[in-house]
Structure formats: structure tokens, C-alpha cells
Length: 472
Image (cartoon, rainbow, N blue to C red):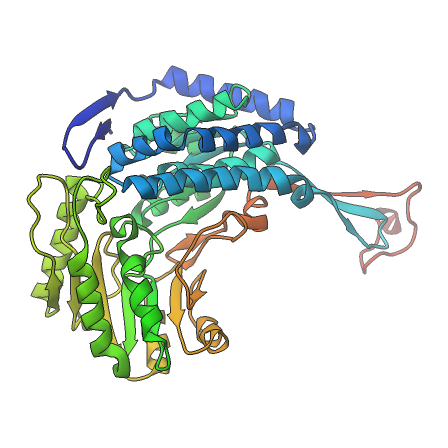
């Protein structure tokens, strides 16, 4: 695997990085394990100042950190700045709340004075993607640093500079050696690290294929894991939806980050009474975007992350059209050698079409017409994935009723999908398992140790279980 920064707008190879040697991997795991032992009984409060300092670094260096993202994966500069600020918010959130989240929980029991204590689990392995290089790392780093779990991580091969920048910021924030270590690993090395007895947990955000491969190794070696994988999220336009709101949000829901978001609205499911208006509005919005230099504030759609990704998406669109779908709209060509994919709207996708239920990771909208809200829910649930979703309805209450019927991990009603530190993030079905962010996010990799104490043994039967001396 070649770790290489290639600017997708200019196609310039910026820098190539060497893979980690076996010796470096071993030294990194040893340092992480030693740190875990040192941290095992330290209070959470000892690590809080580092998270606050890290948040301040991300705020103070927003522009320079954002430029790394734009250079590596083509993200609009303004979107990259937003990602950096969100990372600062996540670091501060866990600094502010970790002690509360991790405090022992008392349990009323006739067995004795019982409490559930939250201790570090051990060294973690993180495998993270290219589409939000800092944000994905901060989601796993901040809560688990607070817990006391050291992390070794493998970032995407096309965003090595982002991995280095994140690791450097953590070190400058004052984290001890071994708290977070970037490893440029081959696929075989990833499996070896997951299998290592010092590694106690695995967190992955990425494709279904990558998740399947890593989860297989984690399962084989009985390592706890969380998986945040793909999605074919539904954007439902109910029969009584306010179309002014729908038409304002729908283009953003598909084109943000050039459509390269797991939780992008990939399937627009529209009731028949709104279908024609919706299509016309979405077409106008897609036609009006400006493709260009992602550093230019006037650019509204960035290139895709790589030629490989662009070619894959084009093959999916071609296959969908060959299977009977209609290319309702394709944006005019752009005079650039950058890896731009022309915003496209597909309609008339039937269940036997290769595109049905498949994730298209880029600026392609699939639009479906349904008779009513019940049919919209049925279509939304007819998918192997269940990550996020959006519902627009005449009232928030009715929208929430529809949302509760969708088989997915997260739904936003009458608003744009957003990610914030306090909101748990994760999905169901082939979109993965486990949650990141929020209070649940800090609990994913802790040893919830039960401690029951008494001044003297209890001779009574407790809870239907007979104490050992009863058998003598």
C-alpha cells in the first residue's frame, strides 16, 4: 500500500511516505502497552488538560490544518475549516464531561455495597477513512484518551499528511509518548496488529468491505470492536412536507463534501404530489453549482478525492443507466483536469437495477416516486444499510412518527443532518455496530468492572444463588 498525498485538483504528487517497519510497529505497541499500565489507575482528571490544549491548537491553527485537508482530498476550504472547528468542539466536550461520564455507578444489591467502575480497557487499534481525516480521528481519540486507552492507528493511504498533522497536534498538546501513534501499515500488518495480544479493541470507519475484513480478524481474536460503515440514507419528502424547506436543504444533503459522506442523502424518496416540483428544484440547484479550485471561496463543489474514486462512481452510473435508469440531469462539463464528477440525478431506478440499494459515494442523487408516506417508509427500509436519514413532514411530531419507523441509526426531522459532540453516531444492518460521540461513545472501550464489598461474608442466600459454603 502506497501512502501518498496527491492533490485531486492539480493531480500533483505532493509527498510519498514509507510504510512502517516491523520494528517500529513493535516499538509503538510496546510504548502504548507501557502507557496503559501507567494510566490504569490514574484519575481521568490527569488527562483533561491535554484535551483542552488540543482543542485550542485546532482553533488557533484552523487555517493551516484545513489546508492540509483540502490539499489531500480536495475538500472545499470552507468545509475543511468547519471540520477543524468541529474537532476542537469534540476535544472540549470530552474534557468537560469525561469525569462525569466515567464516574462509578452505585448498584443497590443485597450482595453488598456494589458499584460499577469504568477503567481503561487497553491499547486500541483505529482504522480511519479519508473523507473526514481529522474528525474521524478525533471521534475515537478524544473519548478514549480521557478513558486512558492508548491508540495506534492506520489512516487512509491517500491522506497520510492529515494523519501526521493530527498525531503532531496531539503531541504538542502534551499527550505522553504512546498515547497516539500513527502507523503507515500494509493490509497484512493491520491484521497482525489487531491480532496482537496487547490490542484490546478495534474501531473502524470505512467501507463495508474494509469493515468485514477487520471485523473478521477482530472476531477471530475476540477483540471488542465498533464499525461505522456505509449508508444509502433516505431523504423522505412526506405528503405534507413544506417544499420551500425541502428544496433549500436537499441539494446540501447530497453535495456536501462532494457527496462523499457516509450519511449523505443518497436516496430521495418523494411522494407523488411533490415529485415533479422536487425534481425541477433539485435540477436547478445541481445546475447552479460551481466546480473549481477548492481553495477559492466562490467554488461550491470540490473535486472527488481521487481518480480511482471518480472512475468507480462513473462505472456505477453507467451500469445504472444500462440497467434502465434515466439520467434526468447531468451537469455541464467543466474545463479542468481535476477529479471532478459532474453532479447527476438518476430516476426510474427499479428494484432489479444494479444501482438499487447500492451506495454511490459522490454527487449522484437517486430520486424515487412513491404513492404515499407508507410506501416511502417501505422503500427506505428496503436496504441492507441503516446509518442515517432525513424526513421532511408538515410537522415535527408527524415527521418524528415517520422517523421512528425507519430501520436506521439516526434520523433528522425537518432539518439538515449534522454531527455534534453530544450526539451519538452509528448505524445498524450493514452500516455497522457500536456508537461514537456522546455519552455512549466514551463507553465503547472501557472495562466496566463490578466491585462488591462487605465487612463480613453474607451467610444468606442471595438472589437465588447459594453461596459456596452451602454445598459443604
